[in-house]
Length: 87
Image (tube, rainbow, N blue to C red):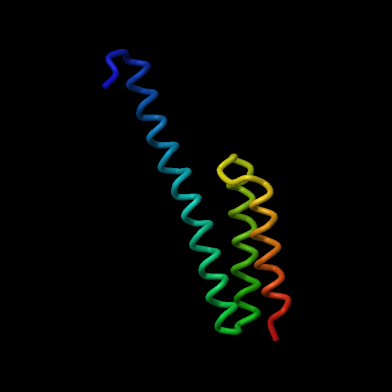
């Protein structure tokens, strides 16, 4: 454990940021799963709605540097292609 006051504060700040980053990453993963689930159910309207939320969230994660830009583009492209191929 740190002894210096500023170091103690830094530990708290890092812990808070880590929790926030983890929450955002998990939100992205959960949105991917829910979008895939709605695609499997065949509900195109709901899948499009979830996809919009997914895009917004994953772009925020990319902007914060949590997910690399190429992965973001790849995930969006895959889900969008699945939605377009729905009947």
